[in-house]
Image (tube, one colour):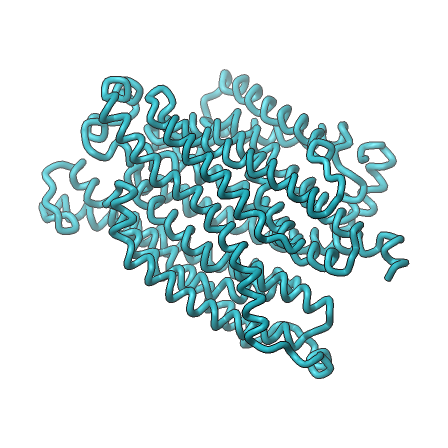
Amino acid sequence: MQQSRKTGEPSKKGGQNLLLGASVLGASMIIVKIFGALFKIPLGNILDGDGMGYFSTSYSVFTMIYSFSTAGLPAAIAKMVAEQSVRGRARDIRKLHELSVKLFLIMGIGGTALILLLSRVYVNIANNPGAWLCVIAIAPAVFFGCMTSAYRGYYEGLRNMTPTAVSQVVEVVVKLVFGLALSTGAVAWGNAQFEAGKAVFGQVCKTSAEANAAIQPVASAAAILGVTISTAVGTLYLLLKYRRTGDGLDEEALRYSPRPMRSRVLLVRLITIAIPISLSSIVMNVAQAVDTVTIINCLQFAFDHFPEKMNAIYQGILSADVLNGESAANFIYGSYAGYALSIFNLVPAFCNIFGKSALPNVTACWSSGDREGTRVNIESVIRMTSLIAIPASFGIFFMSQPILALLYPRKVSEVAIASSVLSWQGISLIFLGLTMPLFAVLQGLGHAGKPPKYMLVGVLVKFVVNLVTICIPAININGAALGTGACYLIILILSLRGLRKVTGLPISFWRLTGRQMIAGFACGLSAWGSYKLLSMLSGSHIMTLISIAFAGVVYIALLLLLRALSREDIEMLPKGEKFAKLLAKWKLIG
C-alpha cells in the first residue's frame, strides 16, 4: 500500500472515479436541465409574474423542508457506505440500507405533515396568501422525495451513480409532461369559464384582469402538482430497480463479512453524521426562504412609504392594474424568482455534481491515510467546478437581458425586471458554484459540522443586506442580488480556510482558478461585444445564440493558450491520455 501511494496510483484512481461519477451525473444533469428548461421556460410563458410568485413561494418552503429531510441522510449514507466498503464490511452496508429506508419513511411522513399544518402560517409570513394552494399541492412531494433519497444515497455510497442519474431523468420528464399539461389545462379552463360568463374557479370576475388574477393561483398549483407526481414516479422507479437488480454486493463478500454492528450503533452513527449535513442544507435553503420572506415584505414597504419613487421606477414596466393593485410586490418577486433564478440556478446544479462524486472518493482516501489522493480529489473539485462556474458567471453578468429575452419573448415586463437583478446575481455564481462541492469535501473529511456554521454566518449577512437594500427604492429588487453575493463570498472564504486547517494541505484558490478567471472574463466580454455588433445587423434572437457560441470558442481557446488545464485533468477524461499527449506536444497544458 505504501508503494502505491508513492507511485500515485491511488491518487489517479481516485481522480478517475471522481470524473467517472461526475460524467454519469453530468450526462443525466444535462438531460435534467434541458427538460427542466423545457418545463420552466414554457411555464414562465403560461403563467405571469404573479403565477411565478405563487409557484416560487411554495417551492422555497418545499425545498427547505425537503432538504432537511433528505440532504443530510443521503450524504451520511454515502459516507458510511464508502467507509464500510473500504473495510470490507458488506453486511454493515446492507444493514445501513434497511435502517435508512425506515428512517426516511418516518421523516417523509413528518415533513409532509409539517408543511400541511403550517401552510397558512407560512404564506401569511411571506405576505403572499395566494400561494396557499401551491403549498398544499407540494406537500406530498416531501414524502416521495425522502424515499427516493434513501436509495440514491445508498447507491452513491457504493459509487454507482447510475440509479441517481436515471431517477433524476425520469422525474424531470414526468414533471415536464404533467406540470405543463395541468397548468395549461387550468388556464384554458379558467378562460373558458370567464368567456362563458361563469364564475372563474368560484370567483365572479367582470374583467379579463380579474379573471387572470383568479386563474394564476390555480394554474401555478396545477404546475406544482406535476412536481409532486414526478417525485412519486421517481420513487417507484428506484423501488422497482432495487427489487429487480439489487445493490450489486457480492454474495461471497456478504458471507465472509464480519458480523454487522448493532442497529442502534449504526443508527446513532448515521444520525450523528446526518444532522450537521442536514443543518447545512436547511440553512442553505433558508437563504432562499430569506428571499421569499424579505423581498415581498420589503418591496411592499417601499411601495407604501415611497410610492412616488417606486411608481416612477416601474411606470411603463408594470401595467396600471398591477401597479395600482395589491400584487405589485408579488409580481416583482415572481419575475425575480421565476425568471431570473430559473437561469441562475442552472449553474450550481452542475457544479454540485463534482461534490457528490467527490464525497465517497475523499472519504476513502482520507480514511486510508492517502494524503496525496485527498489533495488530488480536492484540487480536481475546485478546478473542474471553476471551469463551469466562472464563464457562466461572467456570461450571465454581460448577457442577462438577451438571454431572458430569448427565452421569454412575450414576457416584456418580467424580463425588464429580471434582467437587471440577474446580471448582478451572476457575479455570485463564482462563489456559490464552489460552495456546495467544498461542503461535500468537508463532509467526506469527517467535518460535517463546519458547513452549517459557515452557512449560518452567510444567511445572517444575506438577511441584513436584503432588509437594508431592498427597502431603498433606487436599489429595490437588486438588493436580493447584493445579498446573495455577500452571502456566498463569505461562505467561500470560510470554507477554504476551514479546508486548509482540516487537511493541512496548501490549497491555493487563486493558483487553481486564476487563469480560468482571465479566460472567463474574456468569454463574457466577447459575448457582449459580439452581440452588440450582430444586433446592428439583425434584431433576431438567433444573434444571442451566435454570440454565446462565439464566446464559448474564445473561452476554450484561452484556456489552452493560458495553459489553465493540467495534464492530470485531461488524462482523467475518457481516452484523455492521447489528447493530453497531443496538447502537451503543442505546450497547451500545464
